[in-house]
Length: 247
Image (cartoon, rainbow, N blue to C red; front, side, top):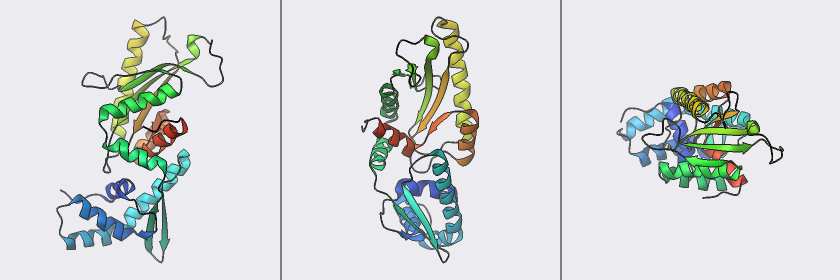
């Protein structure tokens, strides 16, 4: 296995770490390397950590800012004291649910995403598989908040989504979002041609990209600029628990 990038280590630590008391970031990183069995000697691992711990901490601080800006509750805390970084993790219900989803099958994760849209009032379905055309789940007739039930079809939102059950630091890249947008445009075009009585040219549509991991910073910026409903693992589980969905 090649020497990992600090960003990968930072991403992975957020999925690996469970200590609820502050511990030295170097010690947590060392334990992670040992647990994952990297093909590096003890000396190489120690040298790597000494060289990159500041960059790992920098990436974690970026995660803190990103989650605060997205309105996502933090599941960890990072502090610096005399050049030494300390980290602890919060034992919250969403983290228990997230770890369960990360070890489940991709098919069950798609069903979990469907259940969330069901809870939000949509007529939802799963279309994942080899022939899904890049769309894993969808929902029709999702009501705009506070509108009466007897509203016109043009006020009912279509949701097209992709579900990525990733673990171990494998975060969403911008290229994946671009591919998803292309697949969604094709699916919307098909619906408007074949089901014009339900989906007009200007029918409101939301593209949802949900994952059990997280988004690289450039992917997150791209999702925001394009208006994608993007949810990382923590945000998705917080939404699910808020809706009363815990499995």
